[in-house]
Image (cartoon, rainbow, N blue to C red; front, side, top):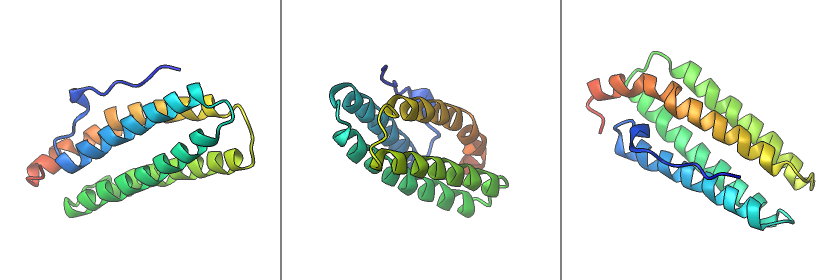
Length: 135
């Protein structure tokens, strides 16, 4: 499976969020690499748990900035995060029950969601955050 490539154009202009976005991309690549070289899926599972934990941390950070900025689409954005984590939890439960051959499906979902979320939904708050002076 192909790695995802970080591009500077993905930055939103808030250092903490940009670092976390980059960290998420790095974890997706770690998942991809683990999937390619871990036929039994043990390391994939551990890395997937790490990814979910980091995504949760990132979502909390992003939501804190949104609340501080009185971002008008906060509830909608927060719900997207909740929905994503629910899907990740469902995948995790299946992996923990040793359901195999889910790794590619998980990676496809994550890659599509993150590219649309970071390149779409997250772009919406950039101007609001700039107006608040967040850097």
